[in-house]
Length: 239
Image 1 (cartoon, rainbow, N blue to C red):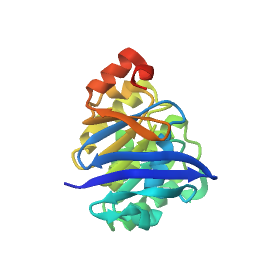
Image 2 (spheres, rainbow, N blue to C red):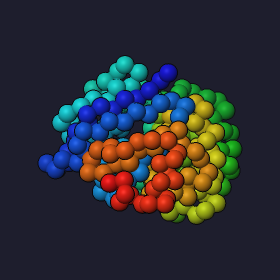
Image 3 (cartoon, helix red, strand yellow):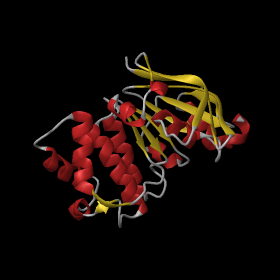
């Protein structure tokens, strides 16, 4: 069983402590949903797991298959099978979208002579026009299209652990349904940490684990029943 274990993780940004002893596990082949009020540290956790140098880890560990991820750089973590879908994907002028996808796949999974055909096929599944492949990365994409492009990368790169940081925000209902269906299919081989504020996505997936975060730590974890409790009572009763 391949699993990432985050234990007693503390981290700060610009001298301000944001994570206050986070304990959470993400198992390959399972979906773990992370929810909580704004400013509770969910996106910080995602960035720290991926190795964003903006954040300073002051205590704790991130163990993945017996290896300390904190000792690895971002690209090394990616090669181990860790992927982060960004909450706000940026436009990168001058970086061709097709070249970006081919280079990423080659670096992480090796060369594939059928890759360009596969990219076009997956683009169609996500209702992304082929013309995007000729543009600079994310340039001219709508907010929802940027999110679907992040999902495209998960489909192509097939990471062991994928962190989706509010990838469903800004998506219309049809895109949210698509996200749910694709995530369920991919979760046979990929473990997901799905950070969300939008419980509509939970109409299309049934997570194996749900955790609630507040003030930089996990305050409650449970199964899908916890989602039902939040829908009925909100966060206040839990907090």
